[in-house]
View 1 (cartoon, rainbow, N blue to C red):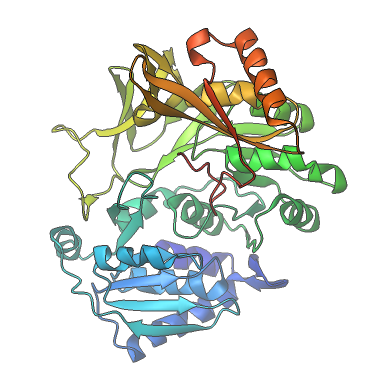
View 2 (view 1 turned 45 degrees about the horizontal axis):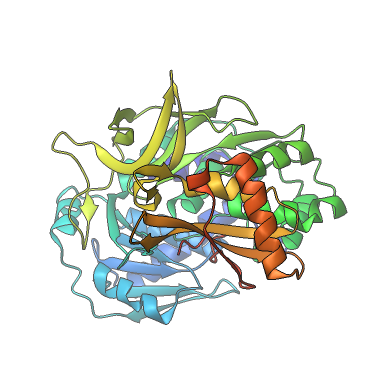
Length: 444
């Protein structure tokens, strides 16, 4: 952790974060870090305690994270959008104290009453290291709490790399967002905080702050293209758009390349259990990607990607270990292989088996996304006594259209592009958005 503070001293006069229209330099962050350390002492936050931190990317939040790391606390980040139903996460993590940073960057502390006891926590405390707990989305049951030795995740930021003007699009409670923040700060860049993550405010933000790197989800990028807000702003500062968190439809990638022909499009790959791997796309318009980098090894077993990482989590708080006996993490992502490159087809659990044939939802969604008047589409399975499963599609339209006529149009187009068993049997048209606050597709 001391290496980050040393870098802050080195970058003292450079802008570190732009928040609510005000620029804070690295010297300002060091002052706030000292205030955060004083707060920890005054509130008697003991070394090794489990402390939740609810916030977004703000100057005081950055200072608090660093101070809690220095105090060897086990940190559990949450966002403002934490729902009442997610209170279970506090119980799973056995949170002892909770810090809330409001929208004006003021913070308060509350006692949560958790025990703070777990064998994985004991391992971290035995090393005299800080910890980090990140939660899975919980789309298939209870969310799982992944426990990290925080010092392992921070190790990568000791290597000096290029820093670009980057918007912190990914959220605070996910490693993608934290990874962007630490990468930026460890290389003397400026963290640019974004309050509204819809296409129009994002485009306005890029124009105003001359953003060079936009890390986003395929769902958001599809919404950006559909909105055509990019036509209303000067986005010429953009050099790189990186995408990950879910499969990218090839049709979206093709449209993205046409709209942003001079921007490098880079696929990323990361998991809360492992961190973010270094990646290299075969080309801007290709879904083939090479992943790995220092501290990571990859292998393919039965067409499923497995990864061994020095920064891998210790395990889950509330679920069995997903690691093989020799330490490889089973991602459950099915892939194709072409030399050093892989193409991620989708999660094994989402693949639809139709009479013994595999259907990858992302492939069908990509085709349907090409059809005029389609805003969003989610492809899913429904049980069938004859075929085992049938392919279904839930579609949100841009403008109203006769449902029967649209269904005929959709099936006709899919029959031209897909094998018959991949064509949706059932099509429903719904007006509700199909993504969550992370701009990630909500699977049925």
